[in-house]
Amino acid sequence: MGLTKIYNNAKNTAYMSVLKFKPKQVTKRLLNSLPERARNVLIKRYGLGKENERMTLEAIGSLYNITRERVRQIENSGLINIRKSSILKEEKTAFDELEKLLESLGGIVAEEDLLNHISKDLSIQNHINFLLVIGEAFKRKKEDEEFRHRWYIDEEHSKKVHDSLRRLYKNLSDEDIIPESELIASFLEHIRDLSEKYKDNEILKRWLGISKTIGKNPLGEWGIASSPNIHTKGIRDYAFLAMRKHGSPIHFREIAQIVTDLFHKKAHVATTHNELIKDPRFVLVGRGLYALSEWGYLSGVVKDVIKKILEKNGPLTKDQIIEKVLKERYVKENTIMVNLQDSKSFKKTKEGKYTLV
Image 1 (cartoon, helix red, strand yellow):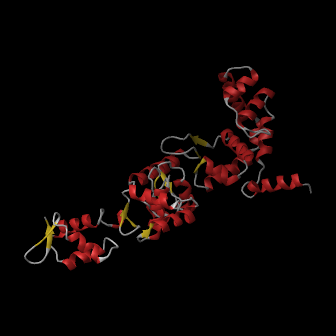
Image 2 (image 1 turned 60 degrees about the horizontal axis):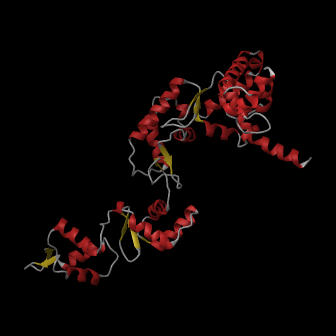
């Protein structure tokens, strides 16, 4: 067997395990029912030829020296004629199989996810997309501010999924970072009235993938897609996720190493330190040691921490202050005592306790 044939066979297995019919053969038979120019326009428009590129109306118009509107008319006429042709009825089993597949994936699926599920081969994807356009059972909603391009079968079912995703998003805040299992459990609460056959983790994750407002970060945790905790852009965002995963205060050198190892992003030590200093999500709690603000650590230098402790608790003894400061900062007791000697900030009462000036 020649190398070319082996390569083609390997490519074909990408969809053979999902679909029993051969998409290219079906589209070829459907296109053969059209006049030559209409057939060629559809081939170029949907990338069904040797070249996978889908051409614009303007580009096709330039080839035939006609307007983009005329190309659109030819395209629409070609699609209508295929839908009316007897050939379409002869290919019913292929469309039935596609419909069953879409239903098994949840009845509504993001276009990219559906095509990738069938095949990673762009050429095959173009042929599948064409069949979806032709098939009367399939409906497509274009991408908007909330959702990606998606295909579905039943309008009412589609509406319920969309509404459930909106309700799920409404309950999230920018700070939320939710494990996948918890988000799915919450999602299930919003789709109680849907058939039990759809309450499958893989289907639910596909539905989550339709949303543009809900997203997943590099650690597989979910939240609002625009949040820096989910849509990570720079070292400080990766550092936040790394520290959260670590779970306790850590030196900035170690943070840089974890970011490099965990996310495969080169994090320079000096850059990491500078980014942590600028971001209020991080608190310096010791010499080079950082914690997350969300862990409850007080911000500021040791003197600021003492002030906040006294503001909250009132006059305290030396030992009480040291105990509370050491819960906030990894410093020596002597450093705390040196700060307490600042007479402009603190004074000692007759009872031997420290208070604010």
